[in-house]
Image 1: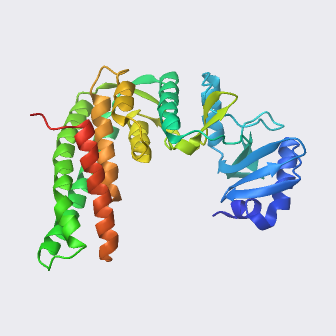
Image 2: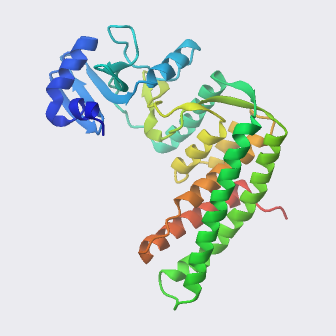
Length: 322
């Protein structure tokens, strides 16, 4: 954590944070509650505020979304300089913003999951533009990713072979029973990678948009009956498939018809490229998350999580043709 964050966003220095907020917003807090590292709730006489540390580049993101009329994002309160984000002294790397504190009224996760993908769709469509895939940038990235996957699958295979050479036990048996799902993912990813690389070589014209890049249920709030996305600091320009892949990974255990929700999202796109890229990214996340550890119980649990996640996803989204 940088010196600036340490100075202003540690609980023992709340007076300095009070002073800073008062200077930039004329907000005088009577009390302060630490929510997590880098964020606080300020309570005033009549209102409550959410104060959060961010990078100063967040200012450009809020300005961009505001200027093109995105209205399903919760914007920070503008400071006395009429800006969404305030710098920490003269530090250009560290900044913070202030939001009205919105009480998170109870909404069941199933409803939030349905609402979240709809708000992502609105965000994506409102910020979309067409762009030709740049072979000089995209192809090297895909080749680097494929090299990583070859290494990762070789690592997993070596680990499985080592288990076959020892006595079976409660840790090795679940790994060996579930290894087939990792192999199925490998086969599918090779095919998907081939399609994506072909699209890059063909200089495909693809829709880009602003991605939330952290689509958790907690990052959707309801204010006066309207849904708003919050915590856009990680947002970036990219292809919608990344947001939907992260949305799936974050919410796969929510009891909703995930297949229908995601299929309906991709109906807006005539090209299978976006769906194929989504499938590739979901499988990539599962393979990346597989933790091969010297502790057998850790590896066994991680292997079961990844392989069963892959099994469920492929049965639902990429079933084998009969």
